[in-house]
Length: 249
Image (cartoon, rainbow, N blue to C red; front, side):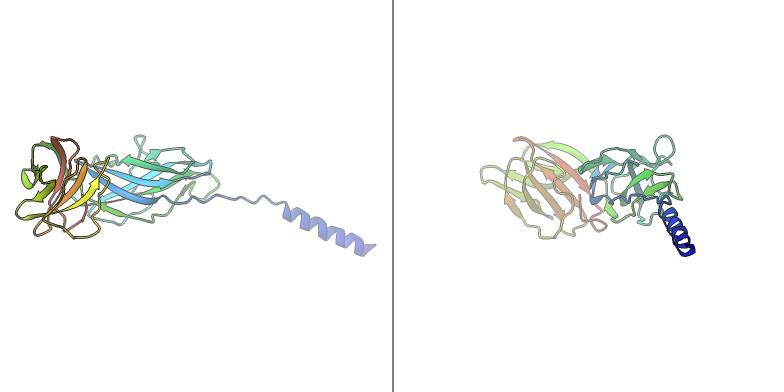
């Protein structure tokens, strides 16, 4: 009888222990496919994300000039209430986001021709964690240089007062000017369809195409001009002369 009572006591203790509250905190998948998109004195960041956790509240955006070292979450841009996340969001389905990077809390604006590093994390609040928040680790930091932009008309292509090429519709050609070469990226529906140049294979001329996207590089490959022939009589252009720091525009 004593043995039975002993075993019952042990079983009761075991069951009591097994009923202890176990707290499970969901981990977030970090944003992926992160790309920086330069603008005229502006920067946008594009990425994919989809977080099912109910405590997810948005994204923290990080940016520094000429420096790719970040401390989380201290270096994140604060929101207009002085806290985190930088950008509130409650979308739980897998989505491709494009967000314009806001000014930093010190009021920093983004200067054309200046190198910046930017990244993004997912952020949430949870009282069950020691820190009271959840944030994904930084897994990709990308460079970007804002660029001067404008529009032009006619068959002489000028970007930032630089004559970079000419259009000859009778010969169906776009030809680079002296001291310049070009790459052709085909017809595009978006000026920023190509941002980063993955090779340095530039040519003297290539086919003309309405909505064609061309990137010109000068002989020393220190300056880049992007040209989108978005109408039969005009074009949109972007330019910067810091290609030695970042091979993109």
